[in-house]
Length: 608
Ligand code: ADP
Ligand code: MG
Image (cartoon, rainbow, N blue to C red; front, side, top):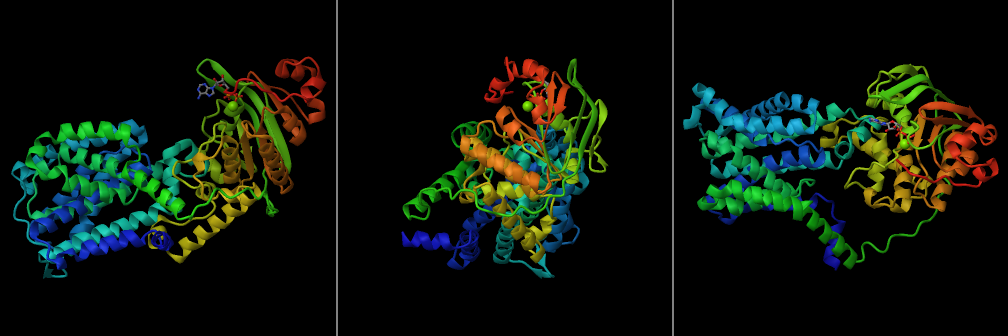
């Protein structure tokens, strides 16, 4: 398999770029008019699909308005052309901006309300397109279509068919390069974090609304470009081209190629364009076909062709000996943990009720830097709720929560994260399709800034941030003894490892307060030992640790202070030596007759 080894040694963009250049040069091989026209239509559809892939596949926003933004782009370019502005660059920019505006205008209400309302608003947008075009009949030509579009020019020179072909392919290649750079950057991981869960996203400091909007906007832009190219391809546009059939074609191509992929968009577009869309008979039944296809595709082909391709690559890698058996665990290495600027976490009089259910009743908890504060109590006693209130996911009914000098009880979750609160989740929350290293590095989102534009252009600043993210993530992975798993898929790890990974993700944020929700549950003995060693080091480095844990031995072992909750109220607090003898704790919480038995028992029981 030497050829395969050589291919794998190339950077990941080399092959797609080569293919792009081949397509670019095809007219030189004497390709006829019909063939070049089809290739241009593939490029145009690929632009549309790639936008959907970003907003739906990566950011998880069910936005179906691609066809409407495409129409906006096409009519912008067409109207400009009729008015005499034939320069293709001017039209591309204008069409991209108008598509963006239409996308934002229609996206914002949907994004505010949630994913299904976004699907609804964008869906209605598509249905409205022909009517809007008809209403604006004076400029758009109404249902008769817009004719009189002049051939495109570039810097004053008219573009012949071959030159225009070059423009279309170059725009497509350029856009795919932009998309690829976004997807492999920290912003691409941030989109996947958002898709996994908005709660997770805000816990690492990502503004959920802003990120959704960005994903949606970036998805709209290529649709505008596609529209401008389409208007100049046939020099005639009419409302039928932008209807519901197109919307379903785009969705079908996305799912076929694999929504969570960059180049899958081009593959899906090529198959849809060169396959079924060819015959006129098919056009009649397109909607039925697409509908059936979407249902089947959704069921049988999750991940699309991109997933099959990744599977094939993995197999070839194995055959070529590029991936041996997973490397053995070298154990935790000695790595320095730099000093942490822990802050005092002070919650006082915090109450919260969900309807009639009083989950927390005037809870007071104080956690100091350089100390481990354990929060224990039976299931349903309010431990997770208290962590969620500290993180800003729920509003307090009463009470105050301070982190250092900052009051956080009124802050949005991503702002609380920026104040320095990091956490793990009772049910580990990790984005799909992301490596262990990337998942850990996502915890550094708020530590350093590197704009999306910097990521697209790969500026030196962007590279610095990326390298620092990686170095820091590797260091912490070493610390938890998971360095050998850095390239594994994060979600595929066993539960205990995923918990350690979450701690690592929280730690790279250099948090001032670290909240661990049932950190050790589901861990084997070795993992519990690693976790305990890690928590001690975080404490010794000056971190503030709040540990929610059911393993009573571990709590007695690790905690400097223990707070006991029952039915949403603090029933005891103090050092372990006091708590393990407190008759009320032993009776009410542990449900065990004497204290000696308590010390030797790992608490089990239903986990919420
Ligand atoms: P613990 O983490 O100690 O097991 P929780 O904080 O998860 O307990 O739950 C405390 C109480 O609050 C439970 O009665 C639970 O049903 C309730 N609760 C927690 N979150 C919500 C919510 N989002 N909506 C309604 N009730 C909730
Ligand atoms: Mg809980």
